[in-house]
Length: 296
Ligand code: GRG
Image (cartoon, rainbow, N blue to C red; front, side, top):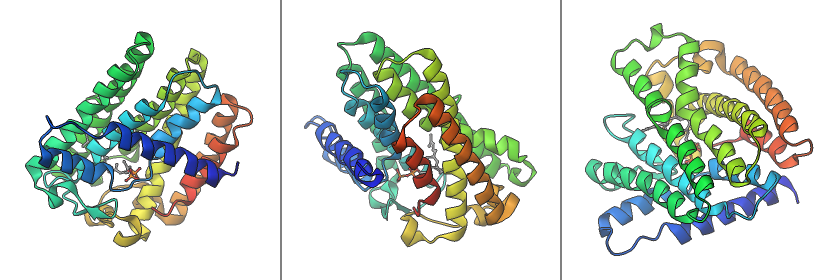
């Protein structure tokens, strides 16, 4: 199967999974349901759950990876909703639609994010209760990646650099560490969760972690390049935020061409890691090129 066809198959399975697991019962207030669905069904590339499925497919087990893929996308969507809030990035546009707080109101958006975050762990604990060790490992992996030392901690440091206006004084190493947490942590978790579901050994988990860091950095630099070179309509979100905030990024540091060179180097290193995880994995190899060439 071609890369594009496989990507569509993975995406279709994820969309089906979201439609299956996100409907909530009447105990969830209508307004909250609408806000959660507004954001999670607004589109989105679904790259994290795709990576989870691709990692699982290397040596699949009998476990169903779809609930974990849905849990991961729900958690990612929560982070976008909260990131867009007036007291964070204050963005109007996300996934080509109004952000959750613009379509509803900030209090509803906070609660919709909280509810999607909580739903992730409810899904993992109920879907895999027949395999308690797998369930616990998945919950541990995702909660660690989303927690105060990684995603939330990275966001805290990032918000604080803006508030304290010390961003220009920050070193690129410091910013890379923040972005490894803000962006990379969920990519690491995506691959790790796929391998945990497939019950793979520790040495493969270690390679997956390194590949997750690599993909997170690649993704972030492309995001910085797109922020500087694309427009709101193509990206479906507010652009030029970095230059407006005088943010130190790979682009402001090395220029667009220099940042592209960084991406080339990261993609080459990423391909070596894919090879050591699975000698002939055409999909993951092409996935790295897809990230490099993405337009949104
Ligand atoms: C609020 C705890 C908390 C964390 C926010 C999401 C986030 C952390 C920050 C967003 C700004 C950022 C770091 C952008 C670069 C990487 C990123 C997370 C982009 C958005 O993800 P995509 O491109 O979005 O996969 P879609 O909409 O396709 O799912």
